[in-house]
Image (cartoon, rainbow, N blue to C red; front, side, top):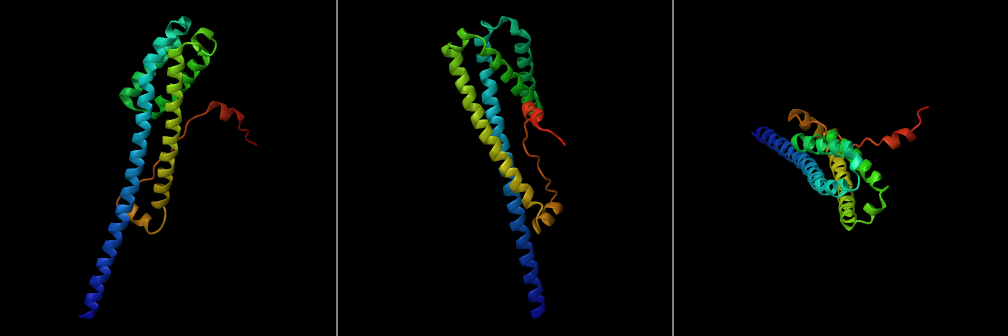
Length: 179
């Protein structure tokens, strides 16, 4: 009779361990989703500034129509798809338009442009922080599902590893030398 009680106690203990580990993995997975949603919020805030920025720039930079059209198309595409690759391309175009704007002294002195540029820089800073938080949460989650005994629970309940957020930086790639 005592052996039966011991076996039942071991089974109960194992079930409790599985519950605790499963809940820990779910909690980490939710942190990853929350961090990703935070990134989306900052992208949306930045994209909401684009029409105001474009309107301010149009009067100064009439010959940059192609860049404006491309930014508008990318903004619309991102709003429809929420595709991170579209967002990265939009980043490149926005950086390009800001760089071009530097060539217009009257524009640089415009209070509205300076205010929009300051807001854009603030959002960009917050976006970088959100990306760091996301990558930290993804790293913690991926480590947890890779170590024993969590990897057993992760495989049983089909927890998959997440990808880190990476931005293609053309300038950084140019400076890397492969030997």
